[in-house]
Each structure stands twice: as C-alpha cells, then as structure tokens.
Image (cartoon, rainbow, N blue to C red; front, side):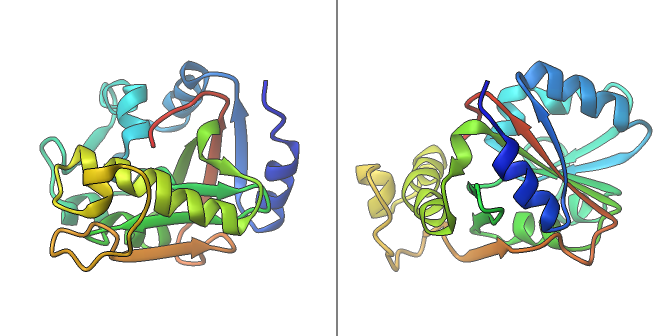
Length: 196
C-alpha cells in the first residue's frame, strides 16, 4: 500500500480531516456509513463515477449531480458536496481546474461538509508538480472526454494555454488550508488509480 503518512500529516496540519483506504470499496463503505439522509451534490468527477459512489449513496441519500438529473445550482445548495482534485501535493496543497466554476466554488464554500475523494494517481511530490499534473494530465483528458476543440484535446499531450472558445481551463483553485466557509473538509485518500 502507498504510504500516505507524509501527505496525511501535511493535510491535517492545514486543517483537513483525512482518512486513508487501500481500495475504493473500503472508502465507499466508510462514506456510506457516514452519510445518511443527506442531500449530496457532486461535482464533475470521474473518480466518483469510476467508483460508482453516487449509486451506492443514492440508496439512502438524495443525490444531485448535473450529469444525471440535477442542476449546478441544486448541487451547490446541497448539505454535502463530493468532489475530487486534479492534483494533490504531498506537501498538502489541493489543486483544481474548472471550466464552469461550479465544482471549485462548491469545494470552497457553502456546504456543511465537503469530501475530496482522491486516488493515488493524483498525488505529486510538491505544489509545482501537482499544478503541472492538473494542467498537463487531467485537463487534456477532460477536454478529450468532453469533445472540446482545443489543442490539448486534439493532441492529448499537454496544456497549450490556448485561447479557444471551448477552453475548459478557466478557473484554478489552490487550497493551502481547509476553507473557512465549510463546516468540515475531509480528504479521502485511496490507494487505487481513479479518475484523471
């Protein structure tokens, strides 16, 4: 199993609660026990989709996901918000890039609880490498998945800092500390590759 000791200590020092799991199934069991009878908004997360977490939690919670039957505004008003990150530095910084802004806004403010669900593939040694990962690995894959007419989607190799009207990299957030506008911020670390 990946040794999450360093990143866990750094995240806790920055005010985040942290839980670590060997598998996505174990993480789902944990969240399934914690979240009951809640409204849960979900950001555009391939990690959550890959896990099937929305289906599992949807048996006893109201799931609001704009990919399915919800709206961005309804998800932003949920009690709990689930998202992932595009890059997580072992030094503790959480990095996300967004096109619409709904995911990064909800990850920062307005919910009773926010859970950042992170596969081991999102980890990088430091801030610069986590930012590089977000821009050059996660963003091109997301642009390709969404069928965008951007250089990164066409080539799939890196960020071109383009000015395409279909650019999905419009907002960048870095969480240096747990946000003050949320009741509880928890990072759920999983020793499996999940999402982009």
